[in-house]
Length: 121
Image (cartoon, rainbow, N blue to C red; front, side, top):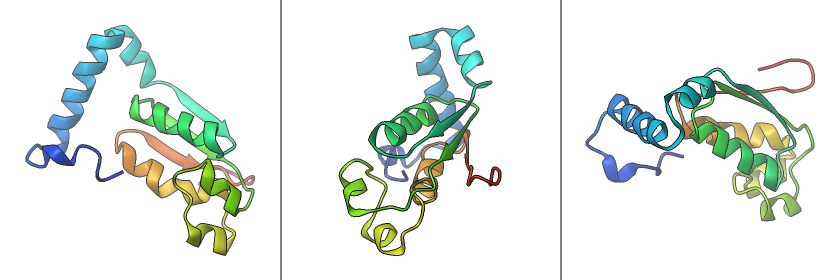
């Protein structure tokens, strides 16, 4: 999360966001970029494909991403999910909850929430 873009240490976060939006507009067009900000996406499952999809959507500046996966972290998950640590496996915390802090750190302009089965947190 925080290491991404650290080579630009002297620029403000507003400058970084404006530069990123400019690159998106050049690649996708202004209409598509405007529509992306209105998207809210639910991702069910935080194994390899789920967490990679969440990361890419968050970095593409969608409006919000909600993660749902209450399955406890296990050692096998470490091979597919780059955000799960040994501490998560030892504590048995849910996969989505384990990934949430790192996913939130990717883009402060994208809302990233957790759905735990009882509601969005």
